[in-house]
Length: 233
Image 1 (tube, rainbow, N blue to C red):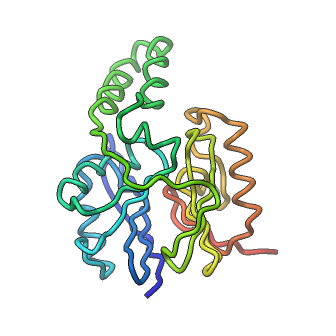
Image 2 (tube, rainbow, N blue to C red):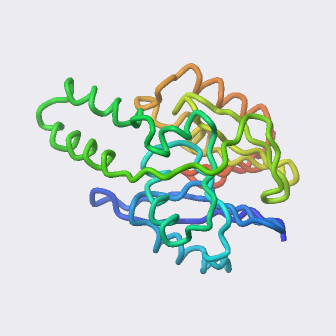
Image 3 (spheres, rainbow, N blue to C red):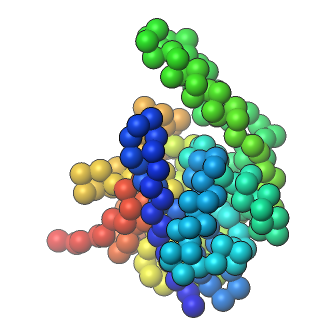
C-alpha cells in the first residue's frame, strides 16, 4: 500500500509549455498530496491522479512546502470541493498560507517594481496582481523539523529554509527518497538552488541544498525537474 507517486502536470505559461511535479504519498490511512500548483489546477490534478490509479476523493491531506503561488495556488479550490481534507504546513509558513501574514513573494515583487525597466513593468504589475489573487486557506496541522509520519512508508519533516524562510522538505527513509519542493531543482543533470534571483536567503538555501544532498538519497523528487536519480560513482 505504501507508495510514492510523482505526478506530471503539463500547462501553458505565457505561451510556454511547462511542467510541475506534485507528489502523492500513499499509506494505509492517508493519501497525501505534496504541493498543488496554480489556481485553476484542480481539474489537472484530478485527471492526473485518476491516470495514476488514485481516486481524488481518497485524498486526506495536502502538504504545502511553502506559500509560492505555484505550490499553493489550487489549495482553496481543493479545500472547497473536498472540505474534509486537512491542510499541512510548517509553522513558519502557516501564517502566509492562511493569509494572516502578507505573502513574502508579493512583498518582494512589489519592491522589484520600483527598479524594473519600463518595458518589464506591465509583467511585474500583472505578477503582483496574480499573487494578490491567491486565496488563503487555514492550516489544520502544523509540522516541525524532525517530526515523523507514516505517509508513503514513513517520512521525516526536514526544515529547508532559504527559498522561503519556512520551506520544508520530506525524507522518506524506507525508499531512501527526498521530496525537495523548491529546496532543490534539477538543472544540467544535477541538483541546484531554485531561482537564485528570487531566493529570499541565498546562504540558507545553499545550506539546505547541501543538507539534502548529504542525505545521499537514491531518489530526489523535485517539483521542478522531476526525479533525480543518485548515480554514485
